Image (tube, rainbow, N blue to C red):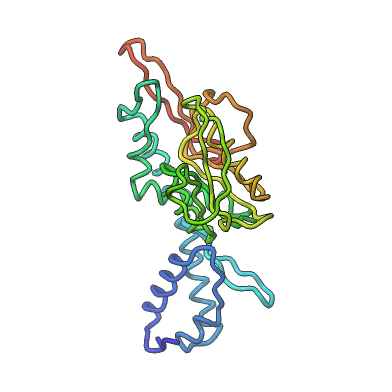
Length: 279
């Protein structure tokens, strides 16, 4: 193991902070830091306590300790206070300040979900919301929800599986289902390699946008083929009132609606935070 006993306390604090931030939801033994810096348990405990206080004061997370033989320290990301308000404000501005209503009243979120800052903050919120659940994997379907799902899986420290619509993109035997695309009212296929998931795994479904619910129904049906359980369903945004299918319970960060502006003579988007942002 590397020896950093020459570090001053200020350097030690920076190292420990960075280590927690880069290892979210991962068990970290106190002994690791004790051996690394060659200091006492009480010294490291004081360092961790100081870092925890700053995290909680900033609203960016907490460090929780679990006792017992398999216990350890865990960094759990949060997004609270000013940072949460800024995220909500930035997304609402982005949703309503740009012409993103496409022909057929489709709503484009591509630029928002390609913004690294907004993507990272959204993933922190989703991971924090579902952190109390037992989750073994995060699942989405290509392509728009992939980046968000990967980031959520990172913060939950679980695997991310991506259902494909084209068997050319998969290797080896697969399990597939057909589903009705609500947006296009046509039958489509999605599939996963057989070794992607194990029976009884608890899976969080993450996707970019809920229009008519066809994709969500397809993903839940695919999980049923693997004998897996749906631990939750989370969308970046939903088009309130537009879905027509019977859907299981789900959560959304934002609700968007099309509203006709009589003065301007065209539709505009209205965006409000979803219920999960009030937790």
